[in-house]
Image (cartoon, rainbow, N blue to C red):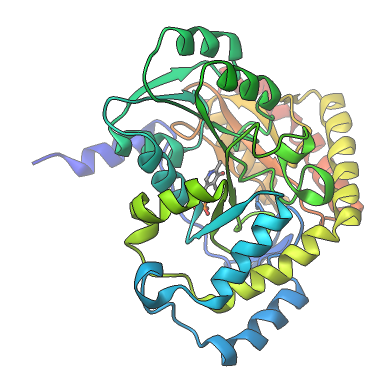
Amino acid sequence: MRDFFAELEQRKQAGLYRTRRRISGPQKPVLTSNGKQLLSFCSNDYLGLANHPSSIEALRNALPETGLGGAASHLICGHHDAHHLLEERLAAFTSRSSALFFSTGYMANMGVISALAGRGDTIFSDRLNHASIIDGCVLSRAKVRRYAHGDVSTLATMLAETSGHKLVVTDGVFSMDGDVAPLVELSSVCREHGALLVVDDAHGFGVLGPHGQGSLAEFGLSEENVPILIGTLGKAAGTSGAFVAGPALLMDYLVQKARTYIYTTAMPPALALATCANLDLIEQGDERRTHLQSLIGRFRKEAVGLGYELMPSYTPIQPIMIGDNHVVLALSQALEERGLLVTAIRPPTVPEGEARLRVTFSADHSCGDLDYLMQALWECRYLLDSRSTVL
Ligand SMILES: *Cc1c(COP(=O)(O)O)cnc(C)c1O
């Protein structure tokens, strides 16, 4: 039998062992963990909607109307008015013909990719795409070709030398880097080579574009330019679930073929109604997004001033590149001793030698919260010099 114990020991020695932190109380910038208060800069609740009074009230009001459980899959008797209403709202909000609601983003990516490509087809995938996209590619049994991060000219060459059905899939905003995919260029090479483009906008939805419509809207890319948009609702939207939006024909096709849509229980319908309430907040959230951008701008200027290496990102994901697994853990630990929670991200979530602190911002952070982070980063600068000496 495989030596599971030895594998775990090996992980510990490599600085790759993972543990879970217990949180009490609601998600907000100040978290309670093991009875201690920590100011967090690692959540994906970019607009501060995960604990918003109006969505909590919407959920409470919905419960007597919808009950609690989803009870069945969407194709049996689980497809509730509430889910349908949310789909209509999402289609309208993203200016797409129709939308399909999935229980998680992971399942949306797995289902969409494996339904829209199969044996004999080719999928082209950015090297830094999210794990759920990678897994969807494997599940599809299509041939998978990965292209270097954001490298549209290599992709164009690959597309030109491939015949048959071609699917190109990319994150809109890359989850561990915070940069935005070259969406306009991707859309034009896909059109030129007859490839179907799928964009997973998990981190752009709610944050980028007019009224938070996402990264495609930011570049004026419509359904004609990018047929399939995937968005998740557990990040800026502050609840849970995901959606796919695009032409009605493709949504119908997914209802027939996406196994992660078909063979799973519908999410509690009350949550769909709470998400509708949060869509209103996203739409009216320009002030939140402006505040968020001002935090991001200030952080970038000051962190670079302190000698930290940032990445080319203007989104709320602002990683500090470290490199070494042990140094990133030491830095994260030193910040925690100062009452801050910033997670160390290590391989295999990021490539070998690219361990980083993933700093994320929320519109619920105050300017004082940012002052506190910068003060601690100033105090911890000495750890950067330990890169060659730690262990
Ligand atoms: C978080 C994330 C997902 C998964 O979404 P969940 O709803 O959390 O399952 C998919 N794609 C990307 C890029 C993500 O960051």
